Each structure stands twice: as structure tokens, then as C-alpha cells.
Image (cartoon, rainbow, N blue to C red):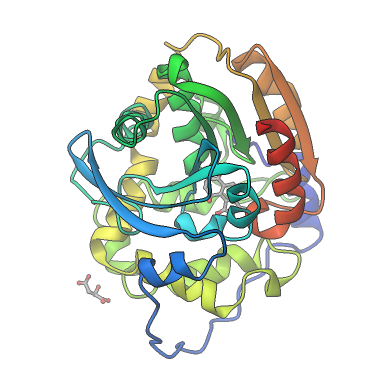
Length: 321
Ligand SMILES: C[C@]12O[C@H]1[C@H](O)c1c(cc(O)c3c1C(=O)c1cccc(O)c1-3)C2=O
Ligand SMILES: O=C(O)C[C@@H](O)C(=O)O
């Protein structure tokens, strides 16, 4: 899991931890539907729903070729992949899935351990006729992607993890109060553990959360403009959406226990680390998988699909060829 050690110290030292200017109450713009957003991306993408493992999942699919599944994280949706989807669609059938609790997918009361969320994706791709797929995950989606490869090895052709490793025991050691210059306050891990309160505090206010996260990561705020932030805030602004997002974090104890039962992933694995995670990826990934290569998105802090989409597209096309 992210140690945010040296890199984060640099970030903190550089005063990177900016307090996002509270955005003036953004006009409650109408955010386009998933159907409209899907059609706005070149490659013939369409918004679809399917039932899998007891939930209705939303996904956006397009392109032609071998199947590649894209899984985003918190607080984002399938839209986070918008810059790489057209490139991938030229040689792949792209399936960008809103994982359980995300965006247009169901937000049930339970089932948010990453092993079960990987089962959702496995049943989804089988219902689409695929027995074997490439899986690419970012953030929480990378934990689901890793769980997919660990639990469904025969269904995993290749696995790419973007900036986030599956949560492990070291998560218990991250200080709530990092010493000055010694780390980065991962406040969202504590916030999302709280039962009930987040929905009351954050529902209808998620644009402030989204703005804070980007203000404390993106080197250039223009990389994710207002429109895209409104798409993410809209997807998380209901009490149920806030609750479902917290459930991904509250399943950490189960996820940490499940990780201990996994053998090494044998599918080829590409790790795409940022400034903050590249060293950790180099050290930890080889303990989790047998066939590992790691590249560095050296201009990125975390949101690589939006900070360095060209690099990511290039590395994915090479790796998934
Ligand atoms: C699983 C998750 O905890 C989620 C969060 O989305 C996350 C993660 C890593 C980050 O580096 C990171 C964040 C995050 O919100 C964030 C904001 C600002 C800087 C920064 O570096 C981050 C994660 O892997
Ligand atoms: O009770 C609620 O969740 C609504 C309230 O917390 C609010 O601030 O919107």
C-alpha cells in the first residue's frame, strides 16, 4: 500500500500540501449522463449495464480487439480513463467498469472486500463472453485488479497496476500524525473508516473533497478541469455514494487478511509507479508476482491516467500487445 515515504516527504517539504481554495459554490451544472459521456469519447464507446454476482454494474465499452478491463478508484469513475480509452480502442475491446459502489453501479450494503469485487468483474467479463482478459487498475481499482489476478488466474492474461498496490499489513503502521517532513497525511484513510458521519459531512460537498485531492497532487490544476471535477463530484454527492466509497476502505481488514492467502500472481504484471510510489513498486511488486516490470510516470504524483495519459497509453499498448 502507498507508503508515501520519501516522495511524500518531498511533497510535504515543497509545501505540496496545499489547502485547496474553497471553490465558490460551483453552479450546480447538469453533468451529462454516462451515455452522453461515453459517446463523447472517440472509439465508438457505449454505456452499458450488466448483472454480475448479485449487483448491476455499469460499464463503458468500445473498440475492437483483445479485451482489456479498466478499473478506476476513489473518488473517481470510469471517466478517469477517458484520455487512454481512444488509444486502447484501436487494438482492444475496452471495458471500463464502475466497480461495486462506484458511479452508475449498484451501491449495496455489503460485498466491498476486493476479493468479492473482483468476483463481480470476473462474472461480468464472462457474461460478455470473455474467458481471459487483460486487467488494468488505478487506486482502489488497482486493488480489485490485483485481486482479480490472484483469485482468477486462468481468466487473467496480463495485469497492470497504476500507482497503487493491494493494501497490506503496513497500512496499520502509517502514522495518523506524520512527523514534519516524514510523511504525508493520508487523512482520507481515517475519514473513510468512520461509520455514518462521512455521508452527513460530504454528501453534496464532494466537489470540495475532489478539489482538495487534486490541489494536493496535480502539478498543474488544469490537468483535470472543472467539467471533469463536476463529473466526479456528481458521482459521489449522494449519501449512498459517499457510504459506498467509504466501504472500499472499511473492507481493508478483510482485504489484508485475504492478501495473506494469495500465492504470487503468475500473470505478467506491469507496475506504473509515480514519483511517490515508484521505489515502493520496485521493492514490493516482486514479492507479489513472478513476472514483473515497473515503469515510472516521473511527472505524476498519483492520478497518472490524467497526469500522464500519453505515457500510460504508450506503456499499456506495449505491455498488452
Ligand atoms: C487507495 C488510495 O488511497 C486512495 C487515494 O485516492 C489515494 C491513494 C494514493 C495517493 O498517493 C493519493 C490518494 C489521494 O487521494 C491523494 C491525494 C493527494 C495526493 C496523493 O498522493 C493522493 C490511494 O492509493
Ligand atoms: O443529514 C444530512 O446528511 C444532511 C446534512 O448533513 C447536510 O449537511 O446536508
